[in-house]
Amino acid sequence: MRSALIAEPSPPVSTALRKFLESAGYEVGIVSTSGEALREFRARSPGILLASQSASLDGEALCRQVKEESPDIPVLLLYMPEEEHPEQRSVGAGADAFLVGPLKRTTVVMCVGLLFQLFEARAAVQATPPGEAPEEAEAPNRRTDAASSPDFEFLKRLLLMEVKRSRRYRYPISLLLLEMDRLSEHLAPLGPSRRTAVLAEILALFVEAMRDIDVTVPISEGRFVSFMPHTAKDGALMVAERLRQRVKTLAPLPDLTLSMGLSVFEPTAARGQTQVSFGNLMRDASEALRKAQAAGGDRVEFSERAKLEPRDKPQEG
Picture 1 (tube, rainbow, N blue to C red):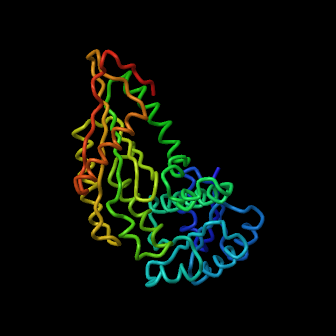
Picture 2: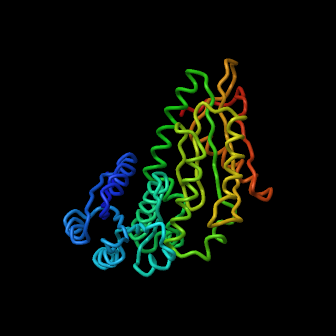
Picture 3: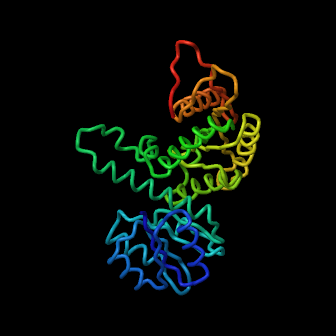
């Protein structure tokens, strides 16, 4: 289980943060002083440190000490709402990301998850023997790393179960593949910590715009996949349009646009309809996304499972 250590002097804030992360499956420890944080850190080596910068706890100094001892442990700095220069201060402290209060559950969970993905990808790169795919090793956000993350594996298992239920109980399921248009250009002026925070904001925007039963996970920097059970084509297209419009309201990147590829499985009583699997839903959504991007972006394209031809064999999920 992934673990997190929270260094926060305010009990209401630390309790809320603990609930946020425990609800997402993290093992969480809480300390209220820098001294306690260093002792706990050295004894247990948590997967990530969340450190508050406040009058009674110098999270920046704590970050510097932790990074000096263990540079491979991600540190997320938490600033008060009145902080005017969080990016410069977090960069100066050596933090990997920062958030400014008030803190929302979705943003905290997504930012922590993205940091874990980033550092796990870096660890995989460092473990690659010399001479093996060095050009890929230089890209820690490549899709193959994120697509093997615990979040993506969870999504695959969930979708496989839902596919079986969909076949049996005859309800539709939709898969939406989302990618920011020219994201690297938009992120180029930002520092590393701000990039992570912005990506977390984007994911939080998607999650908050969808239902509780929908699942959205990142699969690479700027690319996400959303699974929507009990959602037919028309409903999924409405969701996609809502997401397309909301991305344009993202304050840090006001000119950002979104391309999407949608695939839908709608079981019918008619004989001859193709079976469906996670793989072909992803392939259809990927093809639809490529069409959206080729058409200039800032749009959604749709791909539907074709009827089963007599020579074809059904694919099991």
